[in-house]
Image 1 (cartoon, rainbow, N blue to C red):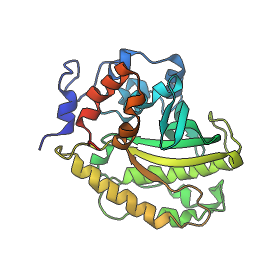
Image 2 (image 1 turned 90 degrees about the vertical axis):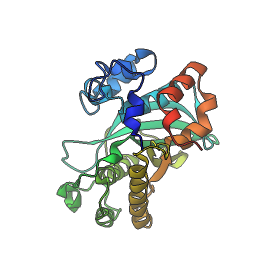
Image 3 (image 1 turned 90 degrees about the horizontal axis):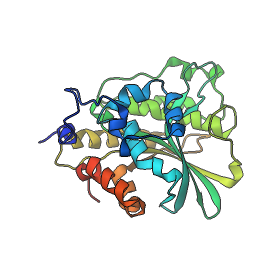
Image 4 (image 1 turned 45 degrees about the vertical axis):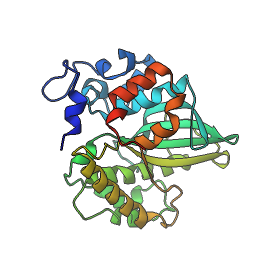
Length: 279
């Protein structure tokens, strides 16, 4: 079986041996990013644009290339018309935490005249990594919880014990802390507070699904199983307002590709979607 990373590198002679460009600008549409978006990434994890974003398999640049156009070109997905996008949104998780959760993407839209927010954790090929990832013990300390009506202990204990991409589950938990904190207006964020009664919300694990002819497809399937097992264990948790969802980039692309400007649509297909699962 061929590796997806090998296909991604084909036709990109400027990549180094590790699959990195000299600049993140070589990894994005038209090689240019608006200053507004640059600030979002620079205020996020710090140095993202000048490190991980230079990798051809960068999930942050995947999400940027897919979603940045929404600011100028609204896109409708599953009945919601999205008209604005934020990247690397900081959400406070627990009291005294020096590192807030960084939500990769937040899409802002409307559905039937009601505001809708989609919180997105973007994944490209991270799920190939099976290293054990531990959630900080601080999250189990009830005195540190900003939101006390959720049974966080049940959610923490729902972490899978089997081998797999545990970092994704860990991030799902920290993001649930962050989203619920935001919903109760207990944290400060670049994401403006909204009228909860007039807004709907969802939290999506947006995953790149390789075509099944690629070696990485097996890791995708294993992570999907791991994630769905976790969601099944927590969906009836007391106080939990948002249940994590699994959505592939292939699902997004199937429903939205004809809404993209022609040049960008061609770029995204050539760069990513020709290697993805066809639906």
